[in-house]
Amino acid sequence: MKITRFLKFLYPAPPIGGLEIGEISARFILVKGSELTEAFVELPLGVIEEGRIKDHEGFKSVLLKLHSMINPNEKEKIYAVVNIPENNVYFQTFDIPAINDLDLEEAAKLNLQTISPIDFKEANYDWQMMSGGEKDNMEFLGAFIQNSLVSEYAQCLEETNFIVVAVETPSLAISRLIKRDKSIQEAVIIRTNISGLSFSFIKNGDLYFNHFVNWPNDKDKKIPRREFNDLIIRETQRVINYIDKRFPEAVKNFKLISLFLENEIIKIIKDNFDIDVQKLILLNEKGLSLYWLSAYGSALRGLIPRYEDSIISLIRPGTETEFKRQQIIIFAKIWRNIIFSALTFFVAVFILFDLFVVNENNKIKNSEFLGKMSDAESEELKNIQKEAIIFNSNIKIISEAKSKKSSNAPLFEKLKETAGPEIAMERISFQGFEKPILINAGASGENSIIDFKNKLKDELGAEDINLPLSNISALDGKLNFSVTFKLKKQE
Image 1 (cartoon, rainbow, N blue to C red):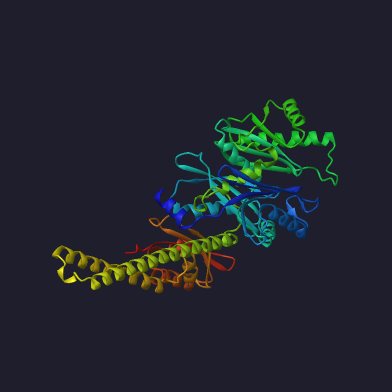
Image 2 (tube, one colour):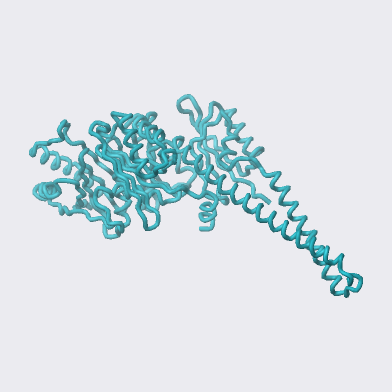
């Protein structure tokens, strides 16, 4: 707890909102205490279709309009957990035997590579641990999406001064709200919107899978009644089959969040399956409508400190560099102001005290009774003079410290400088000064890795450096490796 408070003090995080992007609208929510900042902009038809950006300039104009509604200063950065359509996102669960934290990352990545439904080299992927699972077996949820799809969103957002903190899907955002409702332990959540039909299986508050199907392709977004009924029945049966196979107890509790045709969908499922279907009423203290729940779920994620956020994010770690850079800038500005204010205060105190001492000395010199001072008065004057000398000495030390102030960048800048052009760092895991720092990175060759290890020791003052050979692997013409170390305690 003390470490967490210390990090919050060192790295004050900017406010982070939730930004949901759909085919017909973009919604932004920022939670700040008891206050909500909301902004809504409609998207023209054809700008985004089936989860893909079809009109980049049209999309950026919408983002600029949304930005102006949130902050009139168009150059001001707005931080957001971005919630994108899940048409092209794939979820898979996998198990790993209980192992230590250092091996967990590699084991998870290997499993993701094995189960990926798309080309792993062209995928953005991530995983998160689920709260269930046996004692000797850990359960994980993995997610995959084409890198090009996310990159297009990230580029448009960056060009309109939105800083992407994380990328997730509506199903993850909704599951976050459901987890807050202790009355729902296990359920299938059905969601409908203009894009399609989505089934999410929630168990112990965790998302276990999400199945999304587009509505039949029609320019006017009109679906024949029979075709609509068949699609609901067919996809519901698929989900039931999956649950019966994966979880023998077979959930029969379906909850519905629908923006249209609620009663029709409930009737279709009840008429064809032995299932209890109910409208889902999510408790939210803000009294938001169904349209805002997904954006609100992402906004709640924005309240989590970045170093504690281990939830799935579909953006590559390298794309999050801008957020880290902005935090370093904030950190530098705050401490620059603190140091300047402290020095100004001490200088002012020194000037006032110096004037006081000079004035008292003049009084003493001009006093005709100077030679008649008692021993007690003489001793008091000597004490005042000694204190003045000590105070002046302290002020001198402060001034020298200011002039010799280190110009080194914060920790991440130091690591970047130590790595040099030969090392491409992908992830830095920092959990506190008492724990090892983990770096996942790529290099052009083994010599570069060895040089980097030596620089950590010689230039950064690292100790307990651990660079297992088993963690070095070749991929796409480069070597991937991981290294752990501790920073020496400053005396």
